[in-house]
Image 1 (tube, rainbow, N blue to C red):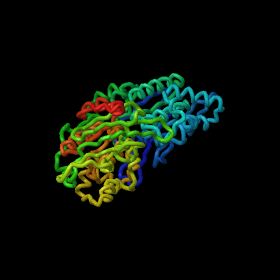
Image 2 (cartoon, helix red, strand yellow):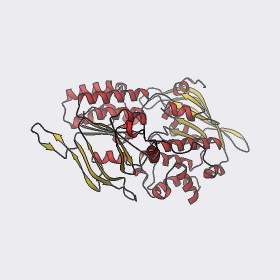
Image 3 (cartoon, rainbow, N blue to C red):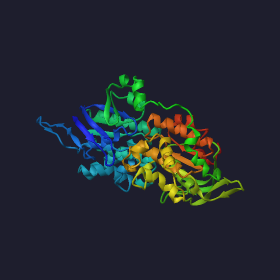
Image 4 (cartoon, rainbow, N blue to C red):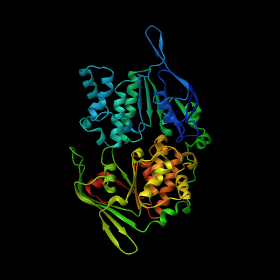
Length: 479
């Protein structure tokens, strides 16, 4: 059994509780879905249950029935957590050692451990990654490895924080299959799964809705999800008009622009990570910037690597990235990808300042520009973030969706001419996704090029003017 008794927690420098008087009971064998808008307290709840936060008040009781009928009420040794960002739980150098780590802590014999690691790798479709360094995996590959390393320990309580956020269709199918298998092996398993997907929630027998750190609803999904007014009020259904953002809101982005990027071209480009097979081989491809281009492909196919090559954060082994620009005076081709902005798949990798305000101001300062107070407020409003509440917060204490939106404006603040968004909807609630779509439409109207990488086919169909498959890029096939 898992009992939460009047749980309350507030992050430093915050003027609001992230968890406020939460009392819930989860019984053996229950699989529960947890939903809520960005910043509602979902990930904080998971961390509190796992003992990763020191709660301000309240109690957490975890009870295990023993053979003699006694109960042990404090042991967290049988809790497994899959974080929203898999980088936050990678502890080993290679995939093989990552899978073995949890079993080593259970003092399993080497022969048993070796056999279980091999079986688990096969079940999760990651046997081909066995000797790879965890730091060289794609976001989706990391998610699969992290998921396997959690499942391999056969936990009594499983806490999943948006476990499919970076997975492709195959990865999601494996996730669902392994969850069914784990429940079959352990009928008393308590599973809590955070998601932003209404379809995922409908597949569970119980749904918890959090709103501003409180329990807004607790019951059957088919009942709760029929209350559209409540879902709109708390941000699980889009309540933002599907219209363009007024131009004056970000008009300052245009006034600094004196160069237009017309295309980003890959010229005989080849690339391979150290001690890994070649990912791109002498490819030629052009991303035109007058339209929004969507980029899709399976996990580990090279989408994020291509983005890093386009921005100059990775260097090709051979060939080059050529940026075609147009100014009032002339048209030219330059080999300087640094003028392209990119929002990473894991936004934490971008943050380097101690407050959200300084994070957004950091890029412009390094370019010799200064954002006014009004411009800063407009940027925060642009993505649905409250400036007064978040300006002084540490970016790393934000929810995953808030971090992603902060990353959007930390790049926009530098007035780039071309932006790459890597999985921009991951972790976003319905309102935030709607705001991003409106933002993308406005960027297009003011001639800022966009490349959007996503596993979400429906999202790409709605937002992109054209969609390119990464395999077409590898073949050099132009649209």
